[in-house]
Image (tube, rainbow, N blue to C red; front, side):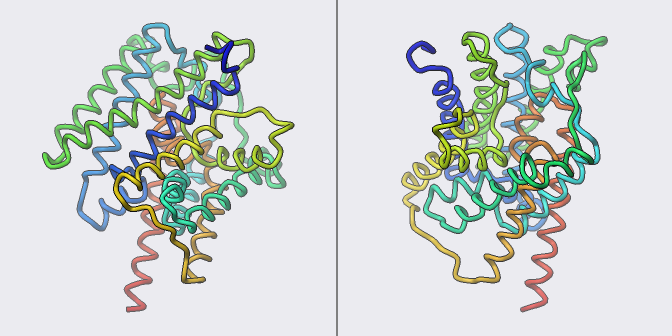
Length: 349
């Protein structure tokens, strides 16, 4: 297959198919990080939390099952090959979460909404992608490296499962943990949402594992050294913009396929629901707040080495040491941002 497609195209297609599933999940199942946090604190609804946990449990189980069977080497996953600073994880997560609340979307959800015709979401995604590149490889990169540089991990991968390797086989521990999380999510899910959460949880979790497995497979069977990655939506948006402008001198990447896939999934999902329509922002003050949030999300995601999907699902499913810290910081930052917005609305009314 690689002889026919070529390695770059194969990598892009792997990202695209996984992103397509995520885009459909966002539109058809309401899979959204900010929506989940808002539901818990202000809607007294935990349905989306258990959808997220179902996806996470499946991804953890599949990642470690494939590792156990020899079809995936989790030690090659980018999140486990580097040691990230605790300060970067916490500060980046807080900035990202607060920015997500101000923008009203994370990068992933913005892409899915853009697929449904929301031009405000398109602007948010574009600004977030550019901000991420500024922090990753632009004028702010030296400051990021100075204070929050990631260093290569030597020896044991930076995974909770591998660190417990002296007590239990890492892959067995991962499979047991993933299955436990998935079953807890199903038991706690309201009956009205059980079928939908089960299906979409398995679909989203499978899409995350598909990214790791696919990029690892291409790297093993091709001639080029490809990083083992999965879905994340911060720098990948910036890379897509960059590639669209300078594609003749650049190689396509996994993240470019992911971005296109989520937009396509959002478009298809909106057609299925009969909800595609063009939307624009009518309030300049609201747009200013959303663009400010987009900039914060771009900066925060780079400091934290991932967004709500990149750290909350992809890194977490590989049992990265810092992923729980980033996820907790994102939740806290989003809660602070939502509370500020809601109290502000109450003061105005």
